[in-house]
Length: 276
Length: 292
Image 1 (tube, each protein chain N blue to C red):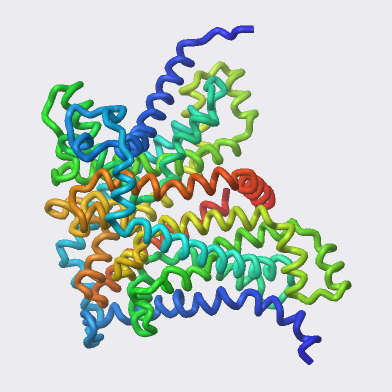
Image 2 (cartoon, each protein chain N blue to C red):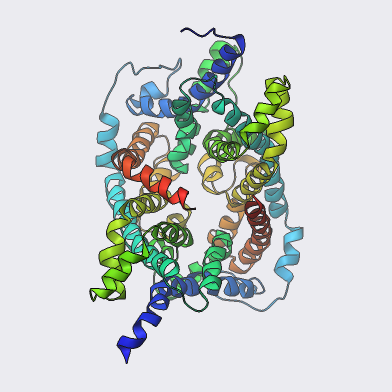
């Protein structure tokens, strides 16, 4: 059965379609520019498909700048953030969800309240504190304060609430300690929730810009976002070809992570949402 | 007897890392920041106690005034597009008449997945004068006029920033609005259809009133994000905020005062004033979120 296509339906598709194309243009432009030689990038009229496609931009970026080094730095920092935050958030989420203890609700409200503290208020004093303990120009300020992740605790508490109490009682009867019950019983059944949180943490750490800008001085310690901004704004002046190639390489790990973990990610989201 | 007490103590131990870290890097800095804002603190020396002088100076500071004006201007220009546009887009993408709805939602959300630095650079590229896509293809070849100074003209600085903000964030507003639309009872639409209302009437008399709490929630979120914004103007216009500081926002100014000029006391006072505004708005947002 063919439905009649109405005028309003045509207009609807045209409006949404034109909008979608404008959303894609800057991304498309970044991708094609990365494969153009610098001279072609800086030529009018513009070319929609590279006239002289090349991989030279990537080669130059990886050999003549600190970009490759910064990729490694960002991966190490992001993994440290993921491991520490996932562990401590799920542990605290477990306590808030599966124990009854004095002051629990007040403490949980306090945890949630901390998300409203604006970043700028703590930025300056933290800088002074980091200076006092000798952490300026190290990765510690990009990793340690992040352990106090209120969203992560909230997320894991919601998620762990779905684990039946009987599982925990059975574990305790079998002689597992309090931590054993968490580690051996809870952690294995909340894997999708852990993966979803890990992705959020990785993404946040990977994309963070202000903190590395404030704390890092030594260029060998720079993160990808910092090097990227640096190639564009400070160090090399007109290097659009490297900037565009770097933009692709910076976005690639995020795309790969989402693609491979998509199934777990979505099941984590829906379950977390259902119990919300 | 450790073994008997342990089950009672365990939850406190399990939640303690959060509170230890928060005390050191969250609570202490707030108090410290308040104290620092009362000092004439520049660089390495903490300086003298000067009372509320830093706060009084703020009101006479032309840079601060310009940053607030720019930020409010940016908010006034971009807010209607991201919030209003997000709502209209959500209604369109929610329509049963539209095909490929999933694909369209993904496309509109895509810019949210790239980092702010990458987003800023993509825009710097597309809007470049003269060889950016917009200037060459649309302005020169299609409109046959002179290239536009998106990145260096003082009058265009905030509008250019607005373009980037709309592009990057409308997907986020879309998701919030789509979630809100799902909570409108279907029988309201049914009743409106039986009464013979058109699409525009349904939008004005059913959708809009039902979405008021969500719109307010999104408006506050947008306000907070705008006052917190840093990477976007930094990438497009640099720490100085472009020609004549025309893109100097509050986030850029706090950074510059504190970490370029190392006026920690003054920077702390500035951060406190902006912080109090943001905190108040967040409280309001929490209220609205609860009611829903």
